[in-house]
Every structure is written in C-alpha cells, then in structure tokens.
Image (cartoon, rainbow, N blue to C red; front, side, top):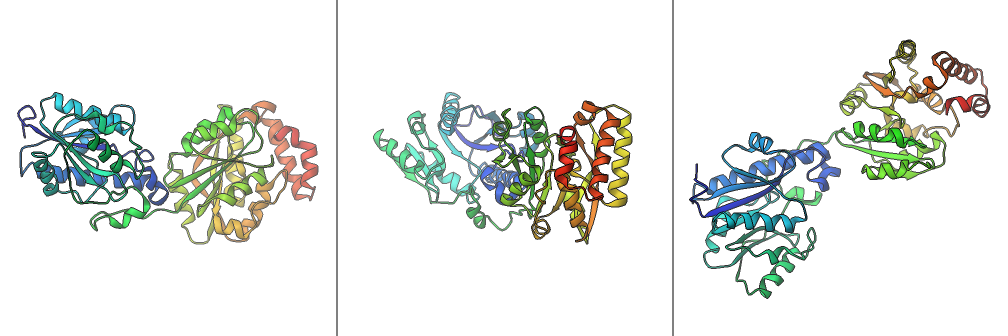
Length: 440
C-alpha cells in the first residue's frame, strides 16, 4: 500500500453510495430506482478498478469523496485501502474547491479529479493527465455534453469553480474562459461521453449488465383532507422499486396536495368523487399495473414484488391485499376475518384493501363507474368477468377511524346495509343519502 504521506500525486474520485432513489436520478424513469443504483455501483467499481491499475504505473494515492452512506459503508463496499472523505454541502463547485484545497494543504503537488460517470476512463488516460500537469497548470477532459469528466491542477485555483452553471452544457466553456482570464496554461485530453441520461446508455461497455426493468406500477391515491395520514402512507409507498405515485386531490383545505408535492410525488386535482379521482389518476398513469390506494392505508413491505408476482399468474387480471385494521380492539379481528372470508371465497375485495389491476384491462373496462359510493364493488363485479381476482399473501394496514367513530358493531351494520341495498338494486345516490354521512 502506498504511503499517503510520502506520495505527491493524488487521484480524487467523486461518487455516491448507491442507495436506490438517491443516485442517478435522471436514469430512474428508464432503469428504475434499483437499476439506477445498480449502475451507480457498477460505474464506481469500474472507475476505482482503473484508478487502482494506475498505481501499477506510478505512485499515486486514491481518495474517494463520497455523498450518502458512511465511511464504514464505503469501506465495506470499495475496500479499506483507499482514503475516504465525505463531500461537503453546497454545489459541485464548493465541493471541488474543498477537495482540491484539502489535498494541496496535505502536501500533494498534482491532483487529478474524476467522477464515475465516464466508463472510458482508464489507467493510461489518468497517467497521461498527471504527465501533462508537469508542464500545464490545468488539464481538462472534455465531455460530449459540454462539461468535463476530468480536471487536474498543480495548485489550488478556487476561481475555476465559482460562477459555473453546473449541470448545463456551458460548464467546460465557462471553465476555460476563467482559466484564460487567470492566464493558466491548459492541456486537453480526448473528448469522452458521460453516462448521465437515458440516451447515453447505449454507450456503456458490453460488460455492464443492466437488469431488465420490472413492469411499472402506478399507485393512485384519491385524497380529501388527508394531511394527517398521507405522509405515512407515502413513506411506505415510495419504498417500492420502479413505481410512480399519483395523488389525486378532491379539493382539500388542509394542505394535503401541498404535502404530497413536498414529498416529491405527482399531485393532480379532480372533483371530490373517489371514482372520478381514481379515473383521473389512471388517465395520466404510465404504469402497466394500476394500484388504487386509500390515503389512510399503508402498503406492506415488498408490496411491489408481491403485486408483480400475483399478476404473473395465468388468468389473474387483478387482485388486492389482506386487510389489517390499525387498532387493538378485539372486535376488529372479527372484521378482518370476515374480510378475509369474503375476499378469498367470493373474490370480492374492496377499496380499503388496495385493489390492483392490469392497466390494459382497466381501460378496456372503462375504469370506475362515476358512482358516489360502492364504485369499487361495481368495478370488481365487472373485473371478475375478465378473469381471476387474487388475494395477495400480505396485508395492508388501514386506519381504524371509521370504526372508532361509530363503534365496531354500528360501522359493520352500516357497511352490510349498504351492501344489501346495492344487491337489491337501490340506486347508489339513494344509498349516499341514507348512509353517506357515516361512511365519509
């Protein structure tokens, strides 16, 4: 292992711990959160392998500047033979200034900094960059997108990283202009391509194995004044892989829509009718699978895998989860058992259970009928004619507020009266007039 105190050359590698959903975000629509994190991991490991090969050519220390994760996680992932330091706060310019200045303050004489987005970087190119710093103040590796994949310096020049429009195609041009204004001598490496956007993916070397994306699940959540519960619902929902979340607000006055937007999910407006709200969400959904979820209901861990596995069974066109009610009342255990019996024996799950369906089947059926009540029951009746409805082997957790408001017996009696009225042909509008104040 090279002694970092005696070596005068340093390679700085900027990367991020590969947490799904927090890295390579511009590639998530194409690869999914898990796939984008996998690519981040592969690019980082590939880049570090090339930098380690550089150590076979010349004495150089390797320092990893990381975001996300901890030093312990980084060492467990990339090895204990490297130096690790977390990136500071601020834009990329501020982080580069700090990294260069700390390296030079430690006695380093030549510093070459790279990211992990350019798989064409190899040990020979890095060696060339260090060699060019013998005669030049600045070495740049131009990227096809107008930025740079490598920058090398032999003294700190913080001005090079100030006033730059990071993330645009002007980065290289602005950097060169500042360098000329400072009378710095510049040497250029070959232009290479970074892997930042979906259109860059074909440039990946053939040894990069990207996992195929699973079917996209669009989770549609109709809400009306659910600010107290929605954040918890979204937290569990966002843990899924390759999912999109659409909150459809029916005119909330408690900041529900603003809360959804602050959580980073898509929020749209619709009339305050659950059926219309769910249809509005489905109209803008991109997923091959639609999952309809109440704003006070939490999905189980691993729900995304469960949904895909259920719908992969031949002749299954839709499904729902088992139901658990968020209360310790023993009477609600009987309610859960009744729901389980009804769902499995009669294939008749309701909205509280997180109904999911193939998007093409949903659209062929014309979506939910615009009813003010029992819209889920009416839809399930039509869905059953298309194929089997399966019950997933895991449970959603729904709020007990309706049962706590009226009591278990009265709430259950009202629910059964609505069902009986529906099957006897009572118009849903009349059922709403009779029972709407109790079920909303």
